Length: 125
Image (tube, rainbow, N blue to C red; front, top):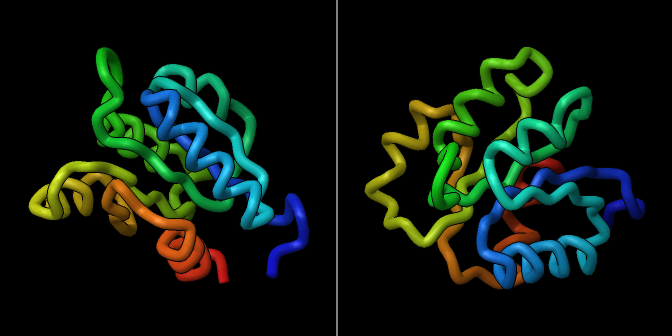
């Protein structure tokens, strides 16, 4: 099990309830999380910060999409080896696009704490 706060997660989710649900699960799993509602907020939030993994919604409403955000973050040296996971209701046929944008994996909504834990352990040990 993680030491509290030992692994950090960036959560980008425009839906309030979905964002709160994910943050609650991460807290139960003893991860520290940074959350943003939009791609623009995420870019500002991550200025000068690093995280161990990123969980990004793909459809973020108006503005930067999760795909664009992922591509932008992956271009920054400090994030090039940080795993990004798409957390989305989009079907898996989007995976080719996700690969091109630098995403390591995909988690379909709705998901359970067991699925989230397995995904985090896959990339963070």
